[in-house]
Image (cartoon, rainbow, N blue to C red; front, side, top):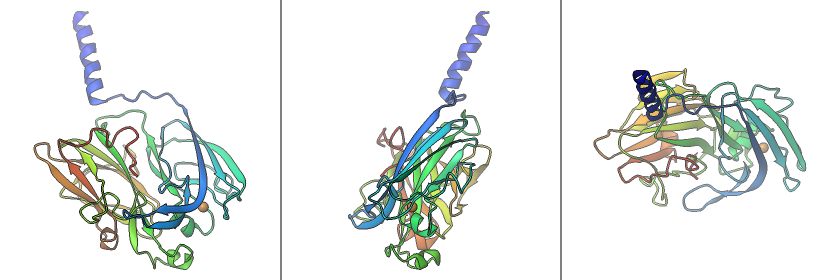
Length: 316
Ligand SMILES: [Cu+2]
């Protein structure tokens, strides 16, 4: 009996340390209210403004996080003060595009709900006409659907970050340029050019951080209009890539992995434990990398313990 109890205790400790079995989820309702906003936002580290359309005035919109089996309960508000019709299209939803994803005029709201059945990282965006313009002007965001349990194949990470890449078209009314992939001058990461890259932008003040040897999980979404992304961690390797963010779709030790337009994947990187290092998380497509699509990851014992945890996963 004593041996049995000791074994059970050991198993519980191992489970707690490795994160196996956590989180023990019961299905819940995740309530989300999003308000379409037609207002200027800042699109670079020096304060340039742009006449955006966005959810709640933020590019990307708020991070929505649910667990497999949850009900996501959505309210979309299009205030009377707006000029355009707007909508919301969740890539995690299996519904009716003409119903749930339909456009609403200024002064109206839409309410619907859906169950999330598949773990992953998903884009959401406005699907109103012209689609290219509503996305290019900033109406997109990220939903993470966590699996019910971590496992050896999908371990609990030490830190998590959300990165969303998009194309910047300064001429906000030129839909032809957006559709034909001309006229984009820069790439945005979480809504700003070189947002977290002080190496390539003297006005950048922030970077991603981890301690050496930590497992850092990047939830990466491609919100471009026409450009696929070749996501690469300079001076490192993706320890694992979870295609579409699903723990069942695992690849090991990948140098560069493609993320299609409107797609997303989850990328784990583990830096050497015995030294401080830096990685540049970049789109290896040079037209994007050299115009804004690179992010510095600093792996240092003095890393801010708050970054990549709790509310500090989608940095702005
Ligand atoms: Cu819209």
